[in-house]
Length: 640
Image (cartoon, rainbow, N blue to C red; front, side, top):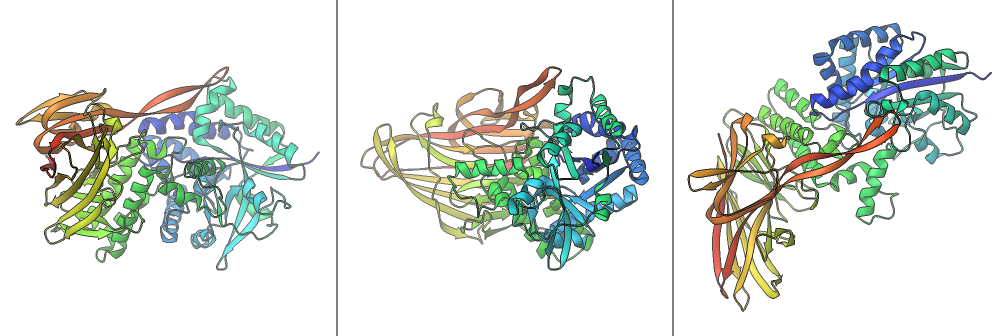
């Protein structure tokens, strides 16, 4: 009877800032039953990876789990894999940040568990050619990549034999790995996966199999057992019963006893599900040849939410790099930056990723905190320009002691509006139907009640005046279209004027048509004050009075002076006032996420409505004679 060496393991990563309820769900459905079931079978060995964020949560909420994990690691039954502390996408962060994150998690495991990890887990198997040097610098000897990637480079070699990769004489061993999942990403018991692999790879004597803890938590009930404990006990009992044929081992044991078959170089690699996500983005952009497609960064640039967070991350990182002063403050800022590098935040991952408002708001809060940490006590407001979104056009940035505002130059809109006091970005709501985020994108339409037919006035604005000393910038755009069956030609001027505690937007609209022009001009906003709809409070302003608006359904309110948006728990209000009467309309933004909910007789799917913010339209009904013009303005302030 042939003897097989088998590695079984579980990797776990959740978005930084995810709710305690989500953590607890995965804990009860995967982390706890996996370890407690394994503990009953002392002869079975396994490998486990937790991100630093999960370790921190476990220490706070389930210290008994950490005690059990420490005991099993010291007995040699469990091997802990290191990696990036916040599981970043390897192709997205600098080698310096990746090295810092890997070293941070290794140091945490050594301090907490008592044994420094020899191997590392890469989030979504993302690989770059510089990783061997990064891993070796932290004394990491091996990592895991999908067997598919190895077969794609040299299909004549064994899919199960480890290889060596190198960067500037720094080498790391790579173990080919198989995911213990079905095609729909449901967890598949390890023994089932193993038997299938044996039929496919008849000459392999070693198999490394890993399962995603989130998949386990969603899939265990499909087994027909009352609890996930029974599911894992059945798996571990199967391996114990067949111990003469299957010898479970850790990757550390494989590393010591197995020689690499060859040296291999990989330009890039990622998991199958992440690659499919990137390919879907490429198909939407009509990209046909993917040979030169850099999966990770291109996927980030193709999603407006991820792109906005990525530009913030890079800008703050550059600021921290220029900081000279207290090293402890700089280190604290780096910790905040690493939190915002969590890989889940830069794509629509299976647990929601960038679509989880609590996660992306927590990421922005970390980056704002990093900015605050390195600021001097007497911070003087200023206006600057920089190419934030990597399109070759410089954007406008205003920073004060109260807020930070980023302007997107080509759309003359606000791409980010941060409160320094509450570390909140009010402009990171998400309108999935329009794939839009940010605030003050301009449109022209015929009827204020049918704003979905609006024509964007926001594709190619130009900066026509930039007075840094006065903290002001003016954009211009000549707009032409057919509205209400008539040709419309208007010249639009939009001036942002910044003060320390507020800013104003001054509009000048001039009719260059030969006939009178009647139309609606409105600004579109995607604000969010809290990740939970019940904690978003919106009111419309009538002079000194305010009236609450039910944001759980569509609304249209004529003749108002402005709006207020707040989260009652933060004692801060975002106030937007118009100097002339305007109308306000809007609706809550939800996306439907299909989640697998398992039952005894198989998998079912449930649709969950995920709150993403509020779409608000502030507009004016205009009637301009030939060569006529109109002036109106908005003021934006954070009130406490």
